Length: 301
Image (cartoon, rainbow, N blue to C red; front, side, top):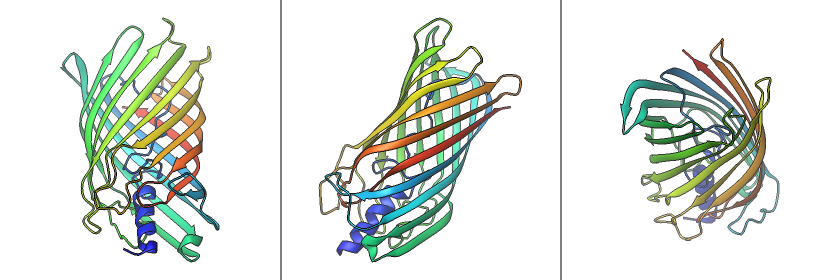
């Protein structure tokens, strides 16, 4: 595969995801949950909508250095997530399930591709999660979940802005949350995702397993407003099978979040801004680095 094809493939793997392209090399983009992400809600049906925009500042190589030229673009996503927490219990935990349907609009202007512009929009790969488990204590919460990102969207290996990734991903989730006081005004949380990918049929490459962590330190004020420090860290743990290089991708970011919940309406709204301060490319040699804005709306039915 010549150099340009290799780099466009890397962007398709690193950029094109069911949400803004932020993961090291998998489907799940870190930073979409933030504060209190590891706490499962009570039994009921919930809709959660994510509006995200990821703005690319530059492209980095395997050493984390910026590539020459002006390489910019953006990913805007409106993602719909339906969660059902049942009345059933398993292993002492509340049991639930979920489905995620992303809608993407991607634009890339790449000097590394001779100044070409790439675009695509549509429904991305769909996630189905048949297992969500949530445990609760007086001052703690814990969550485990399992599901699969299906290779359901269109993928073009020659278009780095394709809304599909061209492979499927099994995702395992484990997280926890601790409240420092009985009134639950201060909390710290961590939510991790482990991703196992299938082969990308069009290229014969199987992306390596990856692990990422979303974390947050939050404080709820007397008026109900929650403020906090948030961040994410993502690592590719295995080299891509079938790729020329054994380099592994990673990315790191920090940000701020604010949120409020209206109990009488069963409605919650959160907003966050993240800045990526370090990204290093994997085997393909190219990875974006930028800033993300997120709005998250939750409605209980």
